Length: 310
Image (cartoon, rainbow, N blue to C red; front, side):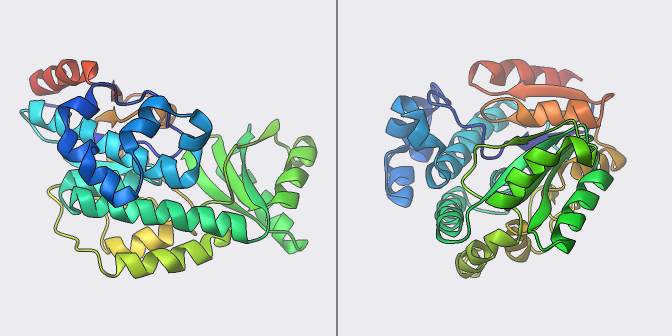
């Protein structure tokens, strides 16, 4: 039996129509209880859009959390052997905590809804900011570029270490524009500006982290059934409330997380949620790992059977 881990996606994986079949199968997760917590109809927005509204930070995050968790609930019910660990990309860390039993589903949804509102507010209230993906740069290069820009008075930080040569920087709008204009001279093939509301996972999110701390202080966390690897440390979570607040202003160390999971003997990874982003990151980071994707109800039985007979 392979030691396998479950991975959950973050913001950016949202699509109108995601979770088809889940809403009718699990109304206790995606129906009135979810609508009451977030203050709008999850089913209507996810099913009908428009995509522009779904993509807004305050909508995308709770919608992805709810759909990903419902898909995990379906998969868990079909599994004969449970995972040995879990992790999530940014927002996905909340889904991972809920999947492990460290956080009740509804409480997690309330936290994610507050997180989305706090991040959206921080992005709109402060200095215009954004993010850019570097093409053809490693972590050392990215850190050097950001440090040099800060030494010149700019505001630029490494925000996501997604995979080898897949680094995202976050900073002020002028810094992101500077990065795009000077990528070649900086030794980077390209810097692609991302369609996000602000400089997530950087000091720009300090007001959001402070606001989120108030909600996290009242959250009830339990001992997880299996380790949950944290974005901020790439190691199993030790203090979820503190680490979830830190996550907003620190880089998402997803590549290091995958490397540490592999070092702990995990050989198989299962992306659970819309899209397949985390599966792609595993393939880039751990080429020899086995990867499966459960992005809809149709994939549940096949992957559950495969995991059970390995």
